Image (cartoon, rainbow, N blue to C red; front, side):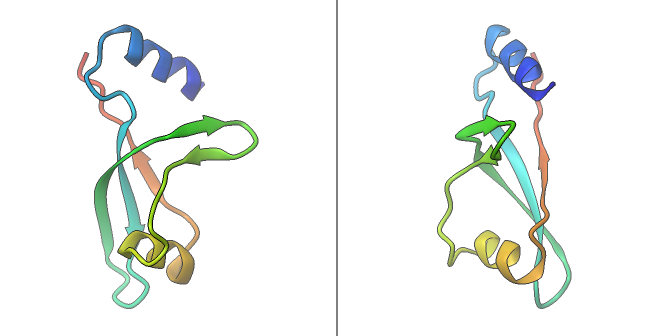
Length: 77
């Protein structure tokens, strides 16, 4: 379903259709942290793919706190 949605966002002329908010949980405080990232690829086999430094806050959060995250896309067009 997502592939259909992003294709529609691209066709509509959305400025950055691959821009998304990634939310993770801090492994020490338990607080949620969100930041804008660029989605690089998506596939049924591998899921959502983006590039990160594994020593970054989001990399540490995903490794030490929880392997789960939230992605939110906003396409105003």
